[in-house]
Image 1 (cartoon, rainbow, N blue to C red):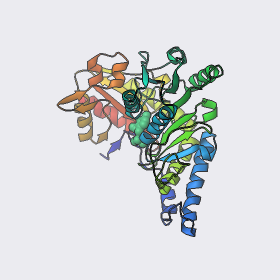
Image 2: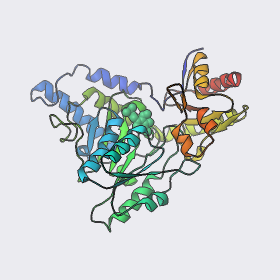
Image 3: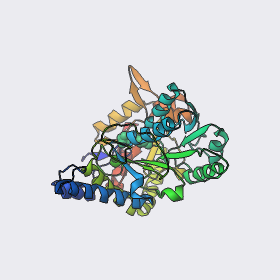
Image 4: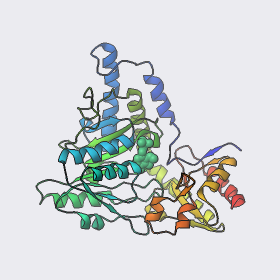
Length: 376
Ligand SMILES: Cc1ncc(COP(=O)(O)O)c(C=O)c1O
């Protein structure tokens, strides 16, 4: 059997548009900070990529900061806001990616206070819950757009509007950051519509290359740089910009956003179908509400199995999926996301994340169901 890749939430294959973009820029090698022709060629490419990303985020090109990953962009947003303010309270959720959680935990060691809001059983966080956690000293709210394990989509626009309303009465506005890494293939990234001040994206989740990400930081938002050096990216992220990465990421984002409505409805149908089939297998339970989740993720638990045995078993049969729980020294560390939903520990140690994307065929999911039948 031809290998089947169903782990797009971890990383997506390069899109043809991206391969074309890489070929197009491969011969341009100048440093975009150099003033000779070769440097200007590189700068033009980086500027064009910046304009392209900005157009899709409905913002100014000057509001885009290219980084080496989404992890870096999350760090820059969270530490950058906090360290610029000096002290204060941060609100985030218990189901964020580690890039957000660990940045917040580090800030706690530096004297900041952090509230980690737990979602309801469905994996959703209401704007009201965020509102209730806001204090006079709150400086930043960071809520992911869509979760990377269970795909649940958070009400970013509602939270953004709430914060904007509260800010009218405050001397120091609360800034609002969203990690939109998993959302870029299916959801609206218009930063004005979403009412966000900061937004993170990653190249490789969109069908672009690894090692490139970006942060949108609304004009007027001051953040302390986390990387010091030559003062590139308006002094906010020193280091020669990854020109090939920026061009490729822009191409990936453009392709993803252009097709998002079509892909959403197609994949949503596949998702329901897959969930229906899997639920008929003994011991299989779905871990999230499909109607409130990204259309390309199904997270299940399989009673009587561990995540690792399932992942390895499927891999042996040619199918790549992911365990939502990581293997820690000597055993399985249950998924902290599933634990935050108050699911029994065994559900969290027997979970499996199936995720797909632009190159997936419906027959790939049919093949998965067949193999799962044998395995379970
Ligand atoms: C929600 C979310 N945020 C951040 C990241 C980190 O992205 P990168 O690999 O670009 O650092 C990931 C990757 O898994 C993610 O899913």
